[in-house]
Amino acid sequence: MRHEQVDRNLLTWPTALLAVIMLVGFLAALVRFRYGLGVTTNLTDDWPWGLWKGFNVLVLIALGAGGFTSAALIYIFGGERYHGLARSAVLWAILCYGFAGASLVVDISVPWRIVNPIYMWPYGSVLFEVAWCVILYLTVLALELAPSVFERFGWSRLEEVWRKLVPVYAVAALTFFTYIMTHSVAWMAAAAVFFVFLAWFLPTVEHRSSTPVLLIMFGIILSSLHQSSLGSLFLLVPEKLSHFWWSMRLPVTFLASAVAVGFAVIIIERTLSAWAFKRPVRDDLLQGVAGIAVVFLWGYIVIRALDVTAVAADAAAAGQLALRFGGTAEAALFSTEMVLGFLLPAVLLTSRKVRYHTAGRLTAALILVGGVALNRLNVAFIGMNMEGTYVPSLIEVLITVATVAAILFFYTLAVKLLPIYDAVDTAEEPTMDRPAEQVRGQRAPAEVV
Image 1: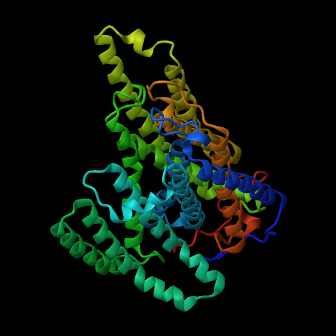
Image 2: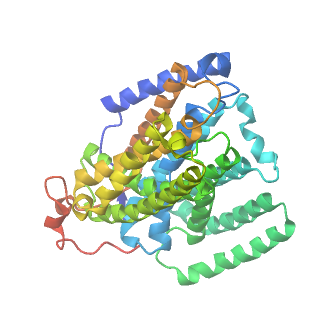
Image 3: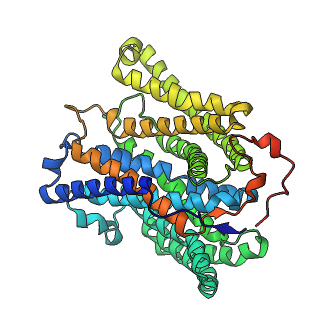
């Protein structure tokens, strides 16, 4: 499949505005480093997790899920026709993950200790597992995006070297990851044998992908682990997290909602960028993406309904149903999150009419992103039962806004400098004024890669 750059000026008023916001955030970060967390934030010993972990880490990691969901769809489950969405999804993912990691540098008390997980390998630490999953997944995303750089500069020989060395890296990284998670030489040896076999066997049966499938599998494994493990963190605090959100199924619900919102972000990213860069909206592809997203969305809703039903049954048996579920701020937040943030987009995307309408599909995807963001914030600090209250400081807000601005800025820069978007015949693509139904059947089948 051929890709192309967006033919636009690098410096425009939106990019200039984003650069100014980034500068303000950078200055706020300097203030934080100069005066410390106690002066510049509203974090306390009772509220050690605030906006930077709640939004800059938990929300951004969830919004970066489009990288592994698109990879699984295209390379594992045979969705070759969606290949044109892959590079932009990977680009968005690497920016979300990268700036989530950068936010941790700002958030932790002693910034240079961000490297501790590299050489300190504790037993049974969920945060350690998350840290290494994110570190290794960033390398996977970088390798997946590398062909766009090779194409941009015509480095064909370097691309051949990349193609040969990527399976070697995947085997080595998977083996290493097995060891640091198990601290067992036997498991490491078994993993090495198994993954070497996969590296030899997969190319003999897989001819569709220009990216080594073992690397794709590695990325999917890492993403599934850390998306669910972020939920596992809160299993440790059942006495602090409200019963509206605490559940033994938190790892499952975190993963399910991440998959659903990953597809929703692909819809948003490709629709808004198409309008911004005067490109066709790939309705023929985004309709299918929306249909897949709604399956995981309904699965999430069912699991959450089972959780709440079980808690309500226990409360009723204890005669505390009205006390635990009636008229509280937490109940209002939970209702808003579930009804408006999840149930509404699920109903909308279930409708074929909405899925096949560009603006309707985009609206549902935006609502879902808001629902997942509210869920992560509720779990991270809003739904916590602790002494006192927490309201983010101005410095915290400025750095968070600047983080979002930086993601948008570097995404815009990348699509203008690198061949990220699939090359399409704009005359035959559906747009807002020319729905997909009018062009269906006019275009040849999508190229199989």
